[in-house]
Amino acid sequence: MFCRNCGTKNQAVALFCKNCGHSMDTNNITAHNTPASTQNAQPNHKFPLLESVKRVFFYIGEIILSLIVSLLVLYAVGWVIVYFAKK
Ligand SMILES: [Zn+2]
Image 1 (cartoon, rainbow, N blue to C red):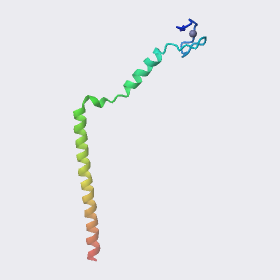
Image 2 (spheres, rainbow, N blue to C red):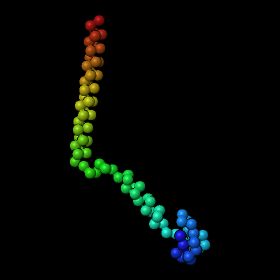
Image 3 (cartoon, rainbow, N blue to C red):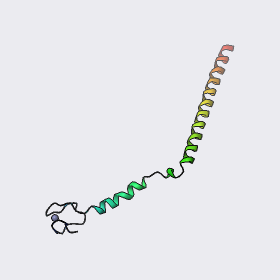
Image 4 (cartoon, rainbow, N blue to C red):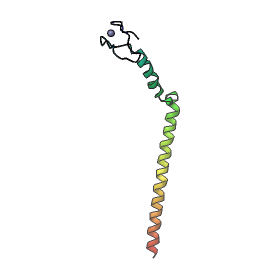
């Protein structure tokens, strides 16, 4: 590509002119960077209601699971206490 300031021919990948130091056209670099940032966008935003419903069910399941685990632990501890109290 040619420098827009002095007209000196530079390499296509050159960021600055080798003659005058003027910054070269960076449209190619920004065009390559734009799709990479859009690819990182989360596709979950398409169904915000479904995602919130899923999250609620996940929290309810987690609460029920923790309750079951704590009840099992209490039952096991009580069973152990009764077992050793009988002896
Ligand atoms: Zn130049």
